[in-house]
Amino acid sequence: MISACYALTAPSTTKRRYMKPALTEKEHLAIMEFKKRLVERLGENLVAIKLFGSRARGSYREGSDIDLLIILKKENRETEDILIDTRLEILNEFDVYPEIVSFALSRYQSFRNLQVPFLLNVEKDQYELYARE
Image 1 (cartoon, rainbow, N blue to C red):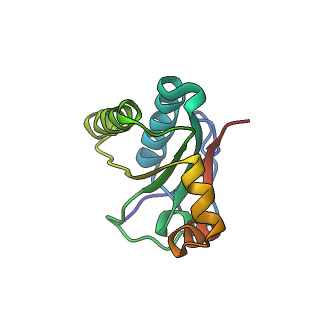
Image 2 (tube, helix red, strand yellow; image 1 turned 60 degrees about the horizontal axis):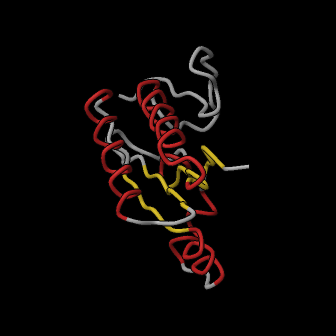
Image 3 (tube, rainbow, N blue to C red; image 1 turned 90 degrees about the vertical axis):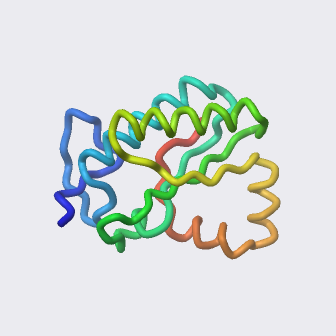
């Protein structure tokens, strides 16, 4: 059985109940650490991180994936390596493995304009974890 879930925006010291379950406490801590490391490592290249799918909708089951959409100014081999390495670190430290879909901002915007069904579903169910100001 899945334990209590916490708001994604709550600071790690504050455990605020979330009306629509999203992540267990361990998953929440892992995803917040993942976000922190990506912000540090990708800097200005990181545009947004969005939780989507069953975890964002609150309709997940035990063992459901944690789906994250990563939007970057530019996608290249270096950013790909950073995403892979950071995800493996989180797996090793927290035993949590987020599933990642990444897009360059220009491609993401083009797909949104074309109303690609995948992105329409992401937009409908998303929970924004990070957005560059």
